Length: 339
Image 1 (spheres, one colour):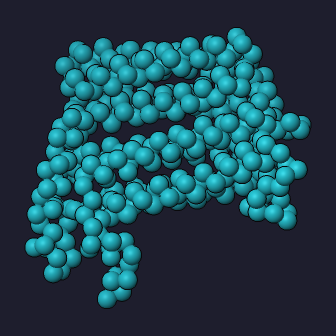
Image 2 (spheres, rainbow, N blue to C red):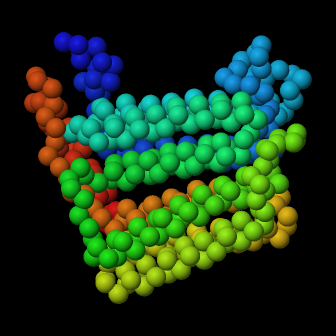
Image 3 (cartoon, rainbow, N blue to C red):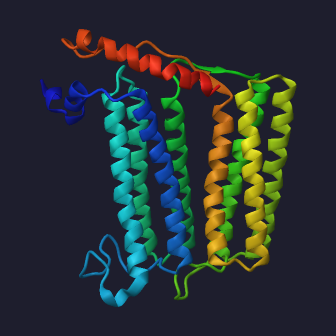
């Protein structure tokens, strides 16, 4: 049988990870998605964007940075190496998800989606270097990283619930309000990349092309959208209280409120202190936390019940049945806790 040579299937036949390990592996992919954003920001803020002058090699003659490239080459090359670490983490999740019982194809598909997003973004990162840090390409590089974080968050949520059809925990009008919050937060992030692309931190000490806009005016637009997201968050909280939504859903809105306040403080500090590198880096980290908090709110307004398990391969059903029941039982409390 051709499938007998599939390494993922061979592992799945010999190992059944716990539901807790599957959730932990998914959570690690979320953490690594944030790390890759923050370290990418560190490359820009330390003016190391062209520390490696070409791609995929660091120089025309060397895969790794040379001594005369200094710390900038090390920082840029180190960020490239993190891509391999990210792939390893995602690969581990794919293996764990494939080996878990009962089989959940939805999780492995989400894992592979993360892998291909990383591969695509690696190519975009290479184009960024080859185009001399074109600000539009740099912005797309960040937005693809945000897409990776989105899929990682959805994956983590799916490990804590079943594969049954999604069921709303609130009225459709409340769900639409949460959609509006997601759209506004997405616009906030996009405008933030324009601020970065037109601002003073070009990513390299040499003269680098910038987006031809007044970054202070774009910053004001960015602040306006902060108020919009803030207002929608408050409106959603009052709405959830009025319709007596599950307490867990209201709690995620409170968490978003706290994250937004913290991010707003950091934003004002960086503006009035003339954009110091460390504070700008904290703001980039905060943008990840804001997006995570927004997604948590959105995902908390629906639930998925357990779906019937996919039958195990022929000849293995009886041997794996006790483990399948154990894995399903381990997931129920987590699913209930996410409501």
